[in-house]
Length: 140
Image (cartoon, rainbow, N blue to C red; front, side, top):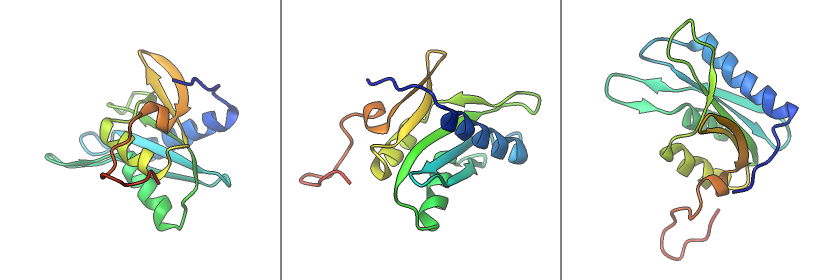
């Protein structure tokens, strides 16, 4: 897997995800924040939406917001998690479902994630190799 350097724009993306989570944090409802940067520099944010039975990940909320705004060219994504109000948001890795959705819409975007306690950045296609496609379907 290709390890890419964390740049100031990536730090700003982590800060944007942290900001949206801090503003919307609620125990049992909103524990993850995400930020997505487009190739032209626009940043979209979102928090996960949860109930007692169902959760919609922050990454899906965020990419849905960006898609709804007409965006299609994604450069990078970062997610943070916070379990208690006194915690500081910490970078987290996208779950398997998020990896599938993000790689479907932006296989060449980079993702900032944590691997065994180490902050890393790589291409989404490298984080989820062998993307699931229908028989005969070309990657997006």
